[in-house]
Structures are given as C-alpha cells and as structure tokens.
Image 1: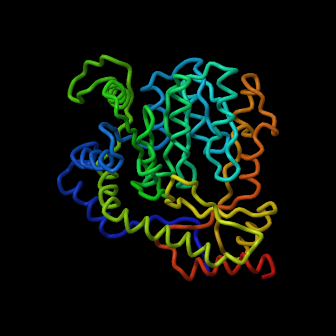
Image 2: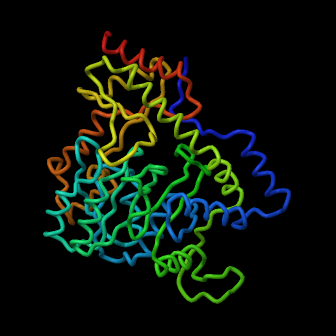
Image 3: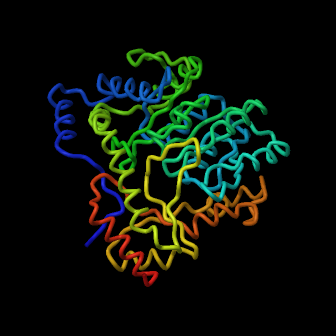
Length: 369
C-alpha cells in the first residue's frame, strides 16, 4: 500500500467553477475574488480583509500595513516555517527568535517577557502551529502591556479558534494561506484580516500598485501587484462549501491514528492546548527517541511523511543574525526537540481508513509490537 504525504481534495466541482471564468472571459481579480474575500471575512468574523497570491505575501503586506520597516524588531518563534522570518527581513526589519513551549510548540510568552526587557520590540508574530491556536489571551495581554503590535501567522490554522474566536482575528492583522496542502486550498493564495480601517486602506494600497481604484493611473502611495485572481478564487468558493466536511474528516483521521497507536508507549499524538480546538494540518507524531530512523522505515514501506520544521536559529540563511542576538542551541531547546523527535504523518480528507491503519501497523512493526 502506498500512502502519499498530502493530496488536495479537488474534484469536478472545482473544474466546473474554473470553467465559468472561461465562459465569461474574466480571469483576473473580479467578482469571484470579491465573493471569496467576503466569505473569508465572515468566516473569521472580521470587518476587513484582502486576498493575496500566497500566505507569504499576506505576511509581508501585513507587516508593512502596520508600519514595520527598517530596523524594527519583530518577535518570531524559532519553530516555524522559513517564511515567517523571511518576510520580516523582506520588510527590512529584524526577526528576534524565541523558543516555543515543549508541550505544544507554540510561542513561549515567558521568554518574550524576558526579551522585551532587553530589546526595542515593535511587533510579535504568534504562529498557530499544526492547526492548534496559541494561547491568545497571553499573547494579547503581553502585546497590550508592552504596547507591541500583533501580526498573527495563521497560515496553518484556518478554522482553528481560541475560546471560540477564530485564529487570524485577534491581532492588528492576521494572515492565512490557501496553499495546496492546507485545510482549505486555492492551490496558491493568502488572506490578510484586520478590524482597523486605516490598516485596511494601507493593505489596499500595498496590493494594488499604490492606489485604491484599479482604473486610475494616479498612484498616491508606493504599492505592488499582490492580487489573487478569479480562477483561484473559484476553487476557494467551492472549497468553502466542503470545508466543514473536510475538517470533520481530518479530525476523524487524527483520532483514528490515536486509537490505532494508543498502546504504543514510545509515541504520542500532539494534542491541542486547553482553549483551542484542533483542525489537523497534519497528524503530528512525537517519538521518545529521535524520529529519523522511524521516518526511514516508513519510506521503505511506501509511506510518505514529513519532518518537522528546522529551527530558524539553525537555518544557514539566518546565520548573519548572530550579530543581532545569541543563536546558541541552548536558547532554543524545544524547537530543536520538535525537529528531532516529531514526524508529520499524512492526514487529509482523501486518505482512507485503511491507509491510516496501515501507517499505524508499520509504526508498531518498527517498535516490534
């Protein structure tokens, strides 16, 4: 049995929706993009928002819209995807890495409290990892206490909430990704949410060549082309119809892994923290010993898995930041633990029960169970 790491839940309904763009002869940002944008705003419960070509561009324009620029310092968790830190540098600011909590790999606010006493921090970027919310009570209290801006990276967390409030709706801005392996996909795409009209206007300028209206060639501000298009928005509109059922399927599969592996004492499945629901982006398996040998064994048995994220402080591209902060391993023990001990197992709606049971069987076989 072969098990793919990921597979988008796209079928004939999305094809038909795309065809409608060809039928009317409109492909760039238009009515379908506006409709998709409005539905995402409603889903998040925010007043304003813009679509972007990717989660990465969403994070970039999000940072710029709240005034992050040359020399500003932005707290970023050490355990995250490269883009979270790269966009800070793209905005000509400095990422300041902090370790994460060991039990859930979300940003450690206790460490942030120490960092903010030593540096001039302008913003914090909580990253909702693995479809689990950060403790947003602590994040927002921290930000308010120190007069710090908040940009949420909710790229892995669409549909996730903290005490009933959606991830991406807490901060000055919140950013989503609709990449192909996400819980809701447009193949490529992103979204920036805000409740602040001034920030929303800035987002409009940034995404649309420095103007609010496309038909004019007067550009009051510097801006770029960060628009989505109706072809991709058409896919997103269909995906929204399926979203609840796709989430239920992911939760079911994640629970099936738990049931199948409940007697394997050498591993455990990552759980959400109290206050957060869980919309599994992947099923995160944590191993007592380092996980690479088990991953190799999965590969031999035609099972694709994925490593956890390589810590930001160890990334070759960020080593010049040693001049900015201490990047010693002992400052980031939990991010290192996540990388060395975690495995992202397949968890997507088209994955069959039989495939999950097979993956669990191979894990048990590895441990001679």
